[in-house]
Image (cartoon, rainbow, N blue to C red; front, side, top):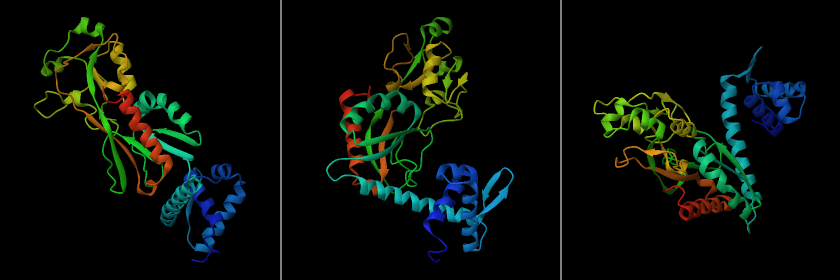
Length: 303
């Protein structure tokens, strides 16, 4: 295709419209009028001789051809953004934006309070912290680096093992007084458990308490199911039931009663993950070193 058909301006407008789902929202993003956006899309469709969008009263839907073009355009712009960031990075010191993703509870409880040290040490690096209990796609540059509670599934990602996260089982004194405490794992069948339930994060064995001691292969249902570790801890403290949370979440065990302390609990392996293209990025290497030092110095992830 000639440059006239596929010029960058039209592709940039097309990508914005495809992501936004409307001419108006794309115009707001690009600082263009709705009519200017519409003209650019019409010109691109005419040049390519294919429709890129179905027009509906409720918005725009990509055609099959539009989907194919947007996949390519998204990949191209992602690679351009990565290249731009690498070119902008000083040879002497790390600089630029670093998009970091991890699970919500780990990000809020462990990582966020420690970022001050990293930002103070590297003032030219701007951190964007994306907390998400699903795995963002690093290959598509939804984030630059990730702290994950499992090894990466994609083969083209570099991984560094950061350590193990340990968990314990807790109840409140109020719950223990009212309901007693289990003396064996089988006794858990008689107790109210607080579990994640169906909407689990990408963390192995996050609901291991529901399976503990069950010989028939079925898991216990929770008396309460919550898709948030912070909320699970809050409900344990409030006396709603028995639950297990990672040790990094329970900095203060005051007012909590340990449950089945001698039972073997699964450890979760934690990894620092990033794409091959960022292997030589100074931003990535200093952030990796910061994580390794924070974990070893404070022992924050290995109680």
